[in-house]
Length: 589
Image 1 (cartoon, rainbow, N blue to C red):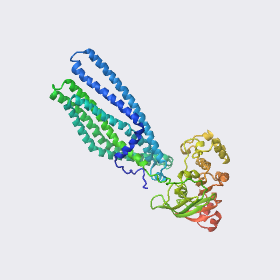
Image 2: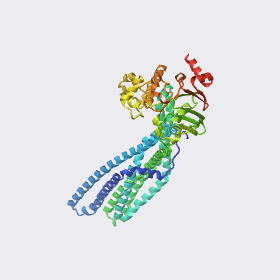
Image 3: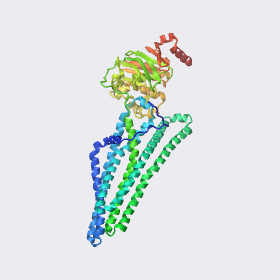
Image 4: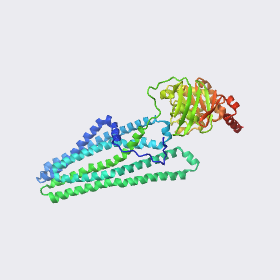
């Protein structure tokens, strides 16, 4: 998979109405409410137009006849019609806002649901900020495209048609002036639409790059300050921010063309109607008709202006929608095959001629084979970057291999249900995460059938209960972001216990105690021996003194397993393991 970085624009999507049609699926369950919105708006518009029709009648008939009683009645009716229009507008606006927020929730839920099942590889190759912006900013904008902008577009078109009907019924010749104006505006929009779309895509890319760098900077702020990188990082941020600003400014130039064109055309058409009516058609056309047509023209251009603004926003929002669907359409690489089976694990693990690469043609493991028996305790050691962690990730099937087979209890791992194997395999990785909730909820994370009392009992057995109780609220102590209110060692102790509590059939420890002092490490190992004695254990450790009691030790080098045996056997071999062990012993001495 191609790697994307914060300073690299994403590939532009191609425009397709099918994306918008797909987005409309979200309004299906809200059709009734949107229909109510449409009806209420139609009544509101027709009510407003009747006021204009009444104005024509008042000018041409009521005032010349000096019928003040009828004039008073007309004013009263007009006031009531305005009040009705305001009430209806407020009612449908409230309904529309509710539907809009519901669709925001639906899109975010669907998007989050999908990204949870994307492979590790997806997150390895994309800045997290570029994913985050799709879940937040894009989803919120797209919801208005699907609801508010869609409804507004239909309402504006309907309003225009109603006004045109009233205009045609009032005077056909003056109505044709407004229609010519619409044709000219449509040509202007058609010419500028593609250019605007390209600039919108550019803005989205620059905004995405900016978000990606921002998220990366926040996650690495301690490192930034440690290396005194603030000024250099500020320059990078300024450059990304400037790229976004420049793209936005270019887009604004073309955005103003549409807005200015509508303003100019609306005033020009209204002035032309008055001029033609007064100097060409009068007295064939009455003053009331001319005033009514001028009022209709003003009302007519308001939905057109709104429509053109909506079309501009549509261009922007459709690019967001395309990005969202691009994420939703991202293939879930690691998934259950057809007829995948559940399994009650015994703990047998076997690699048969396994070759694997994260990126095409860059092998991390090359044709490796080994077997771990049920309840066997196996350690994997080797130099940095030799592929030890990769082996553990493959056991959990977080990636699929290039060739060969991985067997769990004699069955191909690809034929087993992911949910089944991951419930029975617990992996404590090098980098673990503690969530911003209580210690108790973190310890129970991923375990549904355990009580607080059982967790406390396990902590007592592991001799960490007293330490937890010294914290401000004991097990209810809230952890900050990734447990930053604890030391590195304390965080690792909690992650270690969380893995044990999960009670799996296969336990995998990847540098599980690297940040814990040797005394605490030995204590934990001694106390957990009884708890893990009936489990298959795979351990990765740089500190070789902690794995000398393993049933077998595998030494990984140059993408292969080059040595295998007990600690005593490998020391007698005097090969790679011997050299590494002796170098650590010398360092300790």
